[in-house]
Length: 463
Image (cartoon, rainbow, N blue to C red):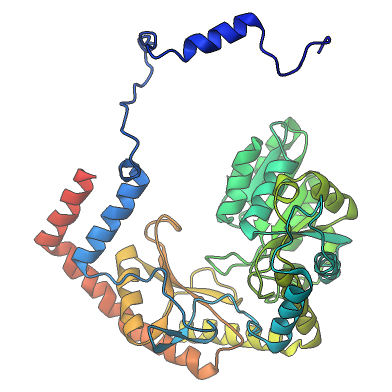
């Protein structure tokens, strides 16, 4: 800095700054040739296109009599059964895969941690927010995943976003499955790295792209999910490991939905294929599903975890995880290890649901027997009508529609839990088989009706 005070403005800079703050601005320069000119808006939230689109959807849905399935308020534990508005429903929109949420041991662990440490870590763990439940959980998760160590974050979404955007940059390459979770795609985009989405589980395309493009970049990482959250398909891990070694890449696997669900001990896709966890460079998991808490984590080598704990923005600049949540997740992990019957029951029920859906002529898309099983509907409007019909029959299940999935591939996503009973699964499949044709017929009537068609067109043009 040559002896200058680092934050003092020189005279020329100060004068330019003062001139820019005068009340009479200089005349605006005409735009350069070919440059798009945007009209100024008053800055009202209601004018933001995304908000206007939400309002359009609500208006059209109300006109067409579509049931609104979003933000239902549960009046207790949302397990295999739940109470909404004073009525009991069979619940297929829960991540309580292993029927652990509300377990007395987990509740007691959280209560003890709250008594000892309060409900907040109080600061970033790097400076003064470290508490015993944090490291106890991280060591246990590392062992569970077959890794040297792990680090926990306050959000599963943040985990993927901060790790990808931090570890890789403009000289690197991120190749990810086209159906990867939004958090992975957003993290890849934010990194500034070269990015390529290969068709779902299409290893021929992946191999071909890397063969041509890997030499152009410094580091490269292949990113996939263990159990895909909207399709219930499983990544081909053995083949991905071969490709990552052959093409000198890292491999990152998002095990959010596969931990607790795949493999005899619930250790995820690596155990499903009987492979060592150390073969996966970056293992990601969430604590909001099988571990009955909230947050995410990365498991891997000691060097990776040390790097993330001292430099990843989502850890360094974020408050530490609430100690009761860390204690709850640790207690849940102890129960998973002590009671493998929970994992076995979940796997049996998931297979039963998949097989019985097929017997009823219902399409389950790419599902392979994990606890995430879609019933494919196709049309988004039909999915909405079907959800409403099932709600009237006291079934709580969420439709997955465009833009979360491609238009034409709307579905109802069923999350299976060890809390469900076999008769629950058979009952809901019978109801779906009964109501799906009615929903499809309703869509045909609506779309061929002049009044409804004109209404949709007029509102779309207006917005």
